[in-house]
Length: 77
Image 1 (cartoon, rainbow, N blue to C red):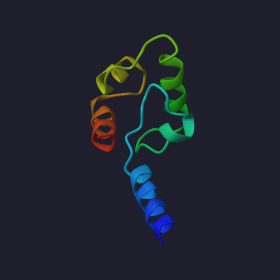
Image 2: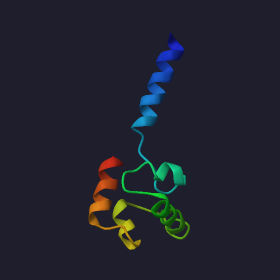
Image 3: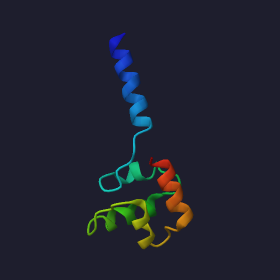
């Protein structure tokens, strides 16, 4: 029973975990609404040269407009 509770808590934590834009894999980034394979790859390339301090920095990338950045912020609370 104790193992089941630990497993459930871990599962819930992972379900609502914040995605770290600086270390997330392509697959993890793609779990954010509005980010597909190409946008995930853009983020990965961008962070090779700059640390992402906040979601607003993504505006420097092609295809990351205000509405997408707002969605990312809301989903990544």
